[in-house]
Length: 278
Image 1 (cartoon, helix red, strand yellow):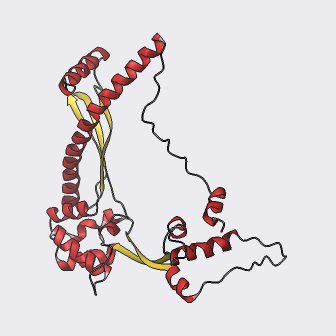
Image 2 (cartoon, rainbow, N blue to C red):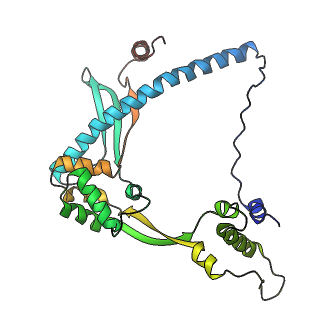
Image 3 (spheres, rainbow, N blue to C red):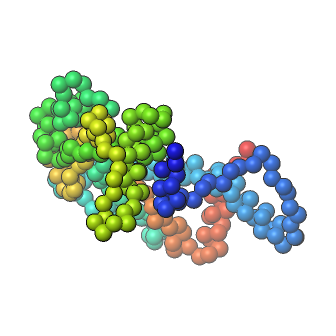
């Protein structure tokens, strides 16, 4: 029997294959000039390996503090604050700066749901209860948040991907479903009416082929309303963390008002602080 999925893959867009690693690779000799370039590259890569974890940790600490500033403004002003730049001065002049951004994501709420809901519990009920427990919000406010800001859509799709179904045990329900579908997709008619004859689905396969699932997302523009469901700043912060908002610190600049020599000296001092002998 022809491998129908294999045939389909020939016409599909191919994902670049990952290169297979080898246990040992040959070593080539380098010219003196290239050795210098490779040495510099290895030095920088080694420094990156040291600096990257430190940078990630410092970003996290500062992002948390900026998050507190942002949420305090939201709670105090009862409006969604703009993202902001920060600036550190030296001698009355700008020395360094960075930017803070807080972004809402609509697809995080669905990740909070288990694979199977407790019996006789709706998605809305489960989320309301979970939010109340996690944030300290009242049951009433948690349910109001879910009813107003969470969109639950019932959808339908195939029981699995073609790969999963077709390469299941031969003759199994998934395998038969994929075979019938691929046979129909790949069938070509030479007649004027463009019709082909293919094997039909029976009741068992038809019932198994399609599955229902729910897509659970947040409404757009939640940032302008999120504080209205909370009774305290603490609840607001916990709700935002529950919703997995993105907090980002970026667009860094350093030694803005320094002369080149002064900035270089300060950077050398920084290297001495952060790059230590292992």
